[in-house]
Image 1 (cartoon, rainbow, N blue to C red):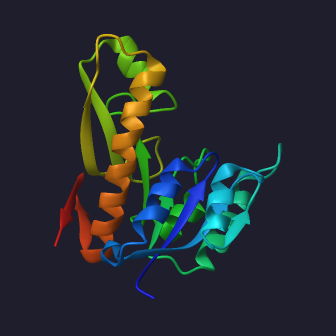
Image 2: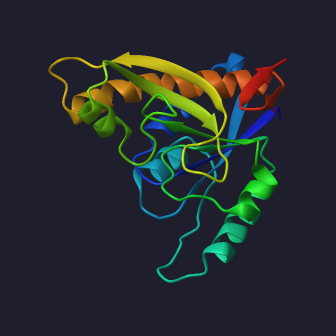
Image 3: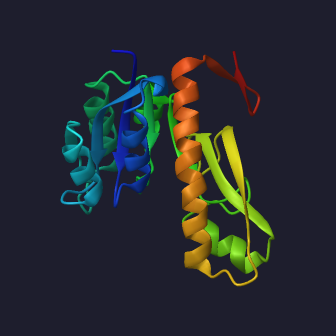
Amino acid sequence: MGFRVVVLVSGSGTLLQSLIDAQADPGFGAQIVAVGADRGKIAGLERAEAAGVPTFVHRLKKGADRDAWDVGLRDLVDGYAPDLVVSAGFMKLVGPAFLERFGGRMINSHPALLPSFPGMHGARDALEYGVKITGATVFLVDGGVDSGAILAQAAVPVLDDDDEESLHERIKISERALLVQVVARMARQRWWVQGRTVRWQ
């Protein structure tokens, strides 16, 4: 079946939609075999169902055992035998059990040029700091917060009249394109990490 991808979502699924659209091109080289979410009844799951992609929901209930949730997520994802796991707006941090299985094969994107402005508010933090260029980063997930080895970045200028919403919208356009490019490249090429640098065959 080629290069198998499981995508994890928590919300509207616009990043997921960019991958769904991309896989219509045979040259993309990857296939989304499942979409998982940490909550039900979200647009991201509806997008997957509309595209005929299998879905699953794995909730983290309040006060539940985080490690057990992590093992459960690992096992659910593992059932689809993915070559790559994509966190596409997935608002939960995965834990050691998940990373032991999928470390080096899980990617995420962030609306800033890492290592600058990690965390939940990349666009807002860049704007408040006064930088003139920010952007999007796709990186390998590790045990930290937005701290994994960087796969690709795209620069987005900060305009004088930007507010958080306008800047974030422009970043998201670059972020979607960058994610598609990275997944397509990972489907075609072998990669490895040397120090903090991702090397491509």
